[in-house]
Amino acid sequence: MSTVRLFYALWPSPQLAASLAQWAQAARPACGGRVMRTETLHLTLAFLGPVEAQLADTLAAATPGYGIAPGEVPLDHLGVFQRPRILWSGPRDTPPSLQAVHDDLWQRLAGYGLAKPPQPFRPHVTLLRNIEHAEPPPRLPADAADGARTPLIWRYDRLVLVASESLSGGSRYRIVAQSRPLDA
Ligand code: ATP
Ligand code: MG
Image (cartoon, rainbow, N blue to C red; front, side):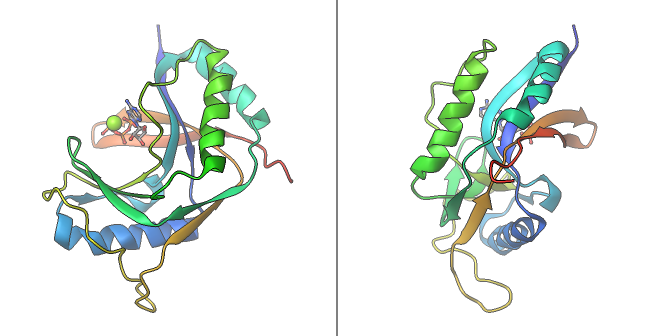
């Protein structure tokens, strides 16, 4: 039976993605590793893994109706996941509004027999993979234009459903559906 590897995510604006890509470049000398491509940067809300093609179609059709309350995530922290050797950026503390987006989404997904993982939600954007040092940089990267080390603010108004496709050169992401902004 054919399956599709799916996840739900927040997708950054091109401007935010460009800022995050600068952070990744700035952190690389200290961390080593591989910079993620700008067009792949995202914040995973729910990783579904392989689902049957029919369920994938059902989810894609339902996703426009999964409107979320608009909100903001401060990207004010750099962290390391030791085992997968990832440098990430995310909020130091998960905003309750984002936690609610995650929890509400999993509640919808439970209706399709999909189970929320037992681990707590740790919102993050992967910036570098295969890092060589266990510690994240102690400070946020400096802005290329003015040198300021200020958090980035992620303003979101929708979630996206993404298919993760294996190619010989690695994974490729394809946005297959997105929720309609509630205030549109
Ligand atoms: P690859 O695994 O081929 O290196 P990838 O990790 O970019 O590529 P996926 O494994 O499809 O692609 O993952 C898609 C997104 O879901 C990524 O943000 C990834 O961190 C996240 N993810 C993957 N597996 C899990 C998991 N078991 N639990 C939570 N999130 C996951
Ligand atoms: Mg993976």
